[in-house]
Length: 111
Image (tube, rainbow, N blue to C red; front, side):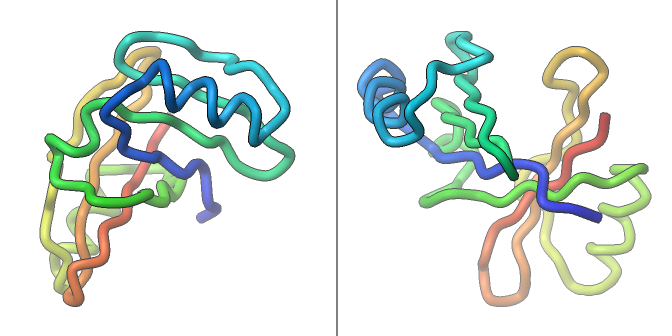
């Protein structure tokens, strides 16, 4: 398992895109109304305009997994609570998010 990306919930995508373009010194490689993504040397930084609706109050780390449904099942059995059920976000990429017993959210990404 490796850290895949950090998704930052934003309410004003245009303003956030300008700020993070300046911070990261790069233009986004994905620029859609539903997601803006920046590639860095080690991890993708994403701006998520639906993050607040999904209950995220701050950045969410997404971990790459080979089998999202199996990983999610194991995490729930270990005490995690599902925040967002698995969904396809395009190109066969599945994502889901959970929170640990202290309420800290994190996500899983497959594909």
